[in-house]
Length: 216
Image 1 (cartoon, helix red, strand yellow):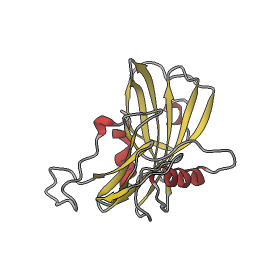
Image 2 (tube, rainbow, N blue to C red):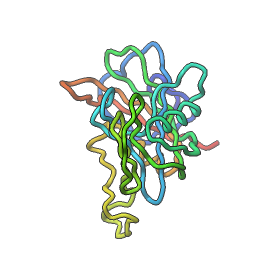
Image 3 (cartoon, helix red, strand yellow):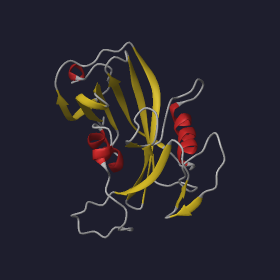
Image 4 (cartoon, rainbow, N blue to C red):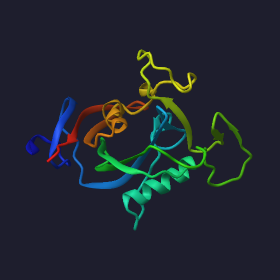
């Protein structure tokens, strides 16, 4: 029911998972961001954040929607800037992401693609450097380091296309990713909210709710 949805969410949604305790964090505005994922050959491309917000975590590729951009345009731009590739991105879901004390919410529009062109590359925005290509990745040093991870469960008995590709490192990602990323991989559109508080140097998730979009 709509009345049971967390503040900031709306639509005809079917609850998928919820958890946590306490009140939902208050906010007075939303700021638009994007997050994009490329999936191919039973693998997913993630980026290791080397600096800034979310440092030392794996995530998709994205950022702020600039003035005059649509979320889709911003997602394409950010993927090119951060990973050096172009992909036919499609909208995959929406996430309302809150951190205590911010007063505003990240409205993150999620995108995914099943193909791409180019070589995933660590982008250098402010200086030039030499680079080498190994394992299909052109390596540089800057904000995000692209890496492929396997979508094949280790106990499935299926042979991976590259046995050296590791499983998705949820322990090195935001706490909410484990709930919505499988939906994105399955092609199931989702809407959700996750609230976080800072404890020491780490963010801890206090409440979460995720739902899928109900078919008419």
